[in-house]
Length: 370
Image (cartoon, rainbow, N blue to C red; front, side, top):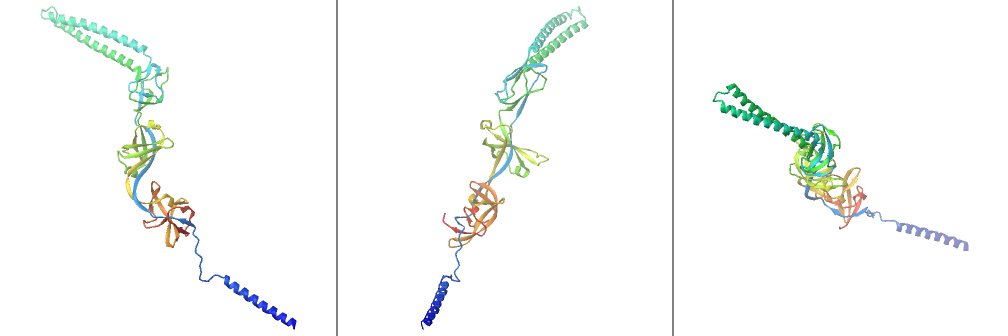
């Protein structure tokens, strides 16, 4: 009797335990119609493209060059250089003596020419007296007409010899003047080939001079770009690690290079040397060619991936959550901290304002107030 009761008790206990497990298991299962809310990848603020006036810029590369460079050479030959008064980089004034040639032989030639002139003038005076006397006694018949003509011709010949002697003296005085080499204009010496003690040939280059120390930028542009430029247009020229200078277009090249099909734009740079610019430096230039209306977004809304620019556009918003889609855009001009968008979006689009680099196409984001 005791064993039977014990067996019944154990069976009942097993039934109760099984029923409890079944009930407990059912209570831990979620409801079939309950869906977990997606977790946002990022909390973002929203920005919309803005239509604004954008300054239109045209960029070009080129070199700094002398506005005009004067060549100063020797105007006399077979003389030795005895003085060189300037070096490369020296500022000079118009008429300043840059170099001096030996003048001993020239002074001797000047003295000989003066003596020849004096002799010719004495002969002229004698011939003039003879001609005057011949004219006075011509009526008396003491001299024949042929003799009178000889005296008159002698006077004319003496006059011609005086003029020749004067011309010879002027030539020697000019040679004496050329023994001093003056600066042809104000400016800076850019090169010197004169050597002390050398005997220079006539026409040989001695110095080069940047006239008025005036520099310009010569930018290289295409034919289409040149059509957008005008004389007098403002330009900003920058030499990397040196400085930036404002200038104006002085001239446009009348022809284009036959090989590159590019042309030169000449931009005046006032006081360029005072700002550290030198002839031969490479420089980048930027021309202001007007304004245009354009759609812009902040730089923070852009993401650069694989060489292309993207923005993330928000889809339909559910509460404070929304999905984003990655949109490829084409950039235009930069305008401060914003970029012009040429294609890809419209003014009505809502974009992620920042953190685009951390998002992927199709991500869910939480929209917060800025």
